Image 1: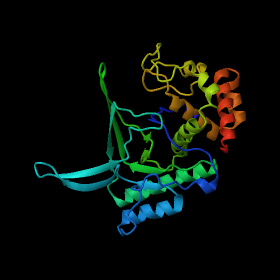
Image 2: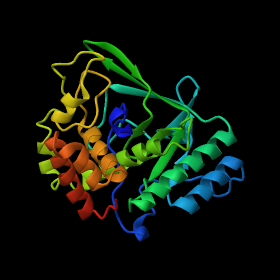
Image 3: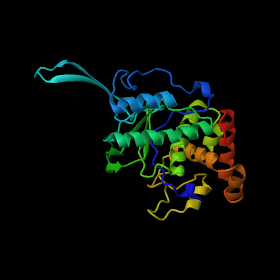
Image 4: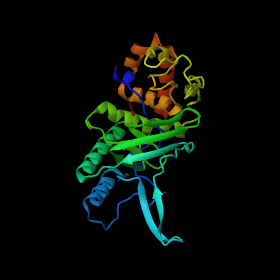
Amino acid sequence: MKYIHIIWVALMAGYCWACSESSLTPSEPYHNFGADANATDEESVLRRNFFEANGFYIIFNDTISKEYIGKDNDGKPLYKTETVDPAWSFYDKDTYTDYEFTYCSTIEEKKKGADFVSKLVSIMQKHNLTRPYSVLVVNGITTIREDEYDGTFISHPDFINSLRCFIVTLPKDTEDEDQQYLFVANMAGSGLALKYEGELTAFYAQADSRWGSLYEDYHYGDNSLEEFYDLGFLFVTSDQYYPSKGEDVAAYMYLLMTKSEEEVYAEFAENYPKIWTKYQLMRNVAQKAGIKF
């Protein structure tokens, strides 16, 4: 099964939950995400057309405004700059990680990115999920995390699920449906966790507070998937830590959207009862949220 072999690289929390079609257009807490209404360049036209078609913003740079405010004491220009600030999630701010982006440089890449995100919208509609407030499409994401004891860690995640914006690296294969579902599962899962925190208490209890903690029996490249299954986790992490809370929720959302109840029962119920229990708990909450699967 493909989903059990995935190395999950999700970061942060997200903001996508089930609702009626009439509430899919975002409200206006921010006013800098939209393209200039009077601009006639291809990118601005692309972004405006995307918003009209899909009900949320698409951007191609993490700087969403830059306003000249004067000069400093040395006569150099000063600007007030606003970014999407990927460090913020619905839960907290990651003050230990820096973010760098490789932007889409051509209009062809940006059109391809808009087309890819539109494919995600189709999945959201199919499962009755709301759309994010905005999506930033880039060619690459680099995270740099400084650790006082272990040094610098550099990684290249496929996406970041932040407070103001879902940031996604344009995949080489934009037709890969598995990857499309991964992105949507992370948006939907984190939004569900935000809105239904209380209802998910029983699901969370199954993890025995292992999220993000050191895997004591870790041996690089030698971890058995079955060991993680026994604990109720659906995948092996790429480092020596258990999956995070967000990754755990997203994994079960992915399972809900890609496998039938009968398939999940046949694969896990007998040998991995904790997975079956967590699946049922997550399914109950998802049904309450109106998610279709």
